[in-house]
Image (cartoon, rainbow, N blue to C red; front, side):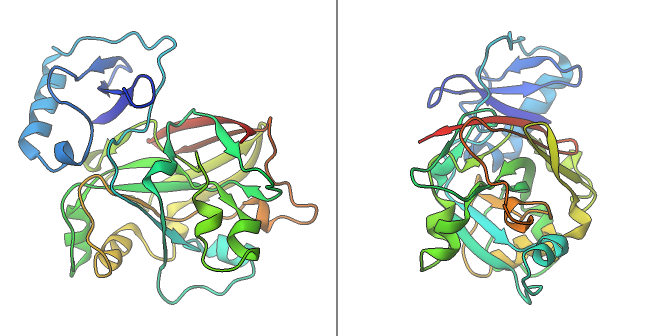
Length: 285
């Protein structure tokens, strides 16, 4: 299934995109697309049954905002330097273990919402990523099979980053990762049954129509199952939590000088195979 949330910020309603590309209203069946729903197998079965029976009312998508596909996110866990190509382009050694950092849940916005360039920023960068959506409480997982069984689905994430704040201003990466609007997510949560191999997905990102990133999840240093298993040994993952799994080569930081960092007025578009497409216009904060 392709699950999504539509409507104004803070007032999104649950919806489903059916096989014909028609937007269907789920609000009579479920309150929201969130951790409570994702952890409830019977509720998801009811949604599947209703979709299969063709009884869900259609929604007019004209002018309808698409919000983040998951509501009430507890935390966003991110994996840094998780593609061989990206580590190489930034001149850093391949990590021996996953690099883990957190983004605040309030950085998450809709896939086509405005991204704000922070005040004083000169190094705002792009990062297309595959996002994991957790569906079952995960703690101390032992095997890759266990890890994948705790995944509800996948989505497109844009891990926007301010490199000066991240690298040059002291401390941890948090300052360059948690600026407002720095995690567009969606358009859809695609349930795991529709993604049989998360290591077989292409990722692409364009800036002002120019292709900048053209990668593949097969280049991940730590694949999806290993990431979930690893993170579960350091923190409890709850239904509705998000894991951004890293970005392929092609970010601005890895380009020759002068590096083409993002500016107000730029347009970024990104996609992951089967998971949909995002488009953001950048504006000043």
